[in-house]
Image (cartoon, rainbow, N blue to C red; front, side, top):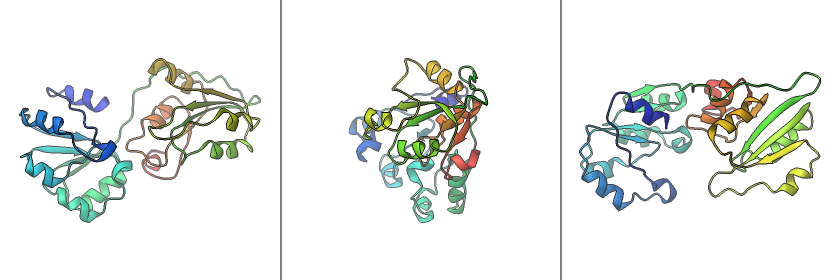
Length: 238
């Protein structure tokens, strides 16, 4: 949403949603809609249409904003196919690869505005309040539980809201560990989510890789100590 709002400050913006990330196929309805639309430029946010498809559709003026977690396996040779198009990258690691491929690249960092209030409730002799958003088994409850066994944590909030296709964590798995855990799912609104994070001392980043990392960046803006894998984009901000 922030990218749309940023563009709207300078341009008239029309949004088209692309679900090709689910099955790799660009919907005919989307192609048809774009063919009737004559923009000055098309911005591809988080999606990478192939240069062959762009040429076939007659799309010559385009800007790509790829996410590191969605394209980290692409080689320099793969990227060179996009030599006709400029890129905006929110990952310095990805930006270096794009520049190595000879692509016109603007590297940027994103620091979100503080949403909600920073309200730390823990004290030194009470222990730390922890927020863990479970999204994928690759950053599992077992990892958090292992770290908790050697730490002074007064409470753990488990945001049990996995990505599409990932299983939820069973309550039996959580309750069997003997830790002070509160389990919840989605909040009614973003402000409630931010308030819960803002009341925590430690935030566990939920994924191995990020494109930007809105979750952990907002946690940082709310004064949390972020625990994250030593991988992009986490290690580009921490």
